[in-house]
Length: 314
Image (cartoon, rainbow, N blue to C red):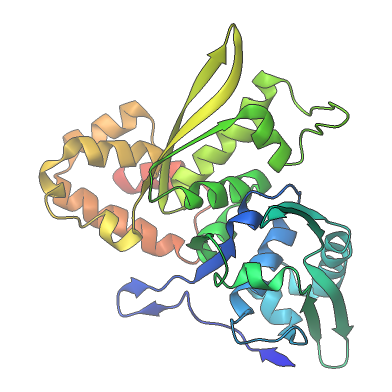
């Protein structure tokens, strides 16, 4: 049994914030399934604990209070919240293709609560384990803390998908295929959740906005039509490191790039951006933005746009 103590990968070391890198097979990234925000965060916590040398019999034991702290949940209701989450997760089926075979698998084979010790023990399904270590086939890497700080379940899934393509920089997908991955379209019955306008309103737009504000990716997208119907999306993905983002060589003279980040990552309106660029030099802007990033490393900021506007007085 692997006892997993409270991890500190996201604590500061000097002036830097160290982020945990998660690995998962592309089959998981593109799989069809649906989880809540809490369930996804619990999944990320488990993924961070899985090691390549672990066996199929390895059980991962976590302290409930630690999990509730990491997931920013009320510790007084820890057991009830977790039990509801894991009960639902035991019914979630990942439908994915692995080596040309259709695999339908639940990520957990068991979840055991020890009230005396205050722990939860999880066992990973043997078919899922190789896909969580990055040792087999093509895999996706992304930041655990980046994914966990997002509040939208669709933002979390899209962040994983965009991370798969961040090195290439573009990702094109048919809207029905994307809906299928998000469990919003059943190709057998033809049942489809959300018409096209509501799909953008409730899924794409809020997810992309949150990813731009809270992750290491900057994403834009454009629509493609077949006839008069929107059928495909192309996402343009730019990968930036938090520490490097504000201190890249030459950025001092690039007001356009700074202005873009003030909108896409820090949530300012165009008129607020213009006032910031007019009232402050770029060195000062960078320093203030870095302080905002550092403050938000502990998820202390709920509304990036409002907080950034307050910092700059716009």
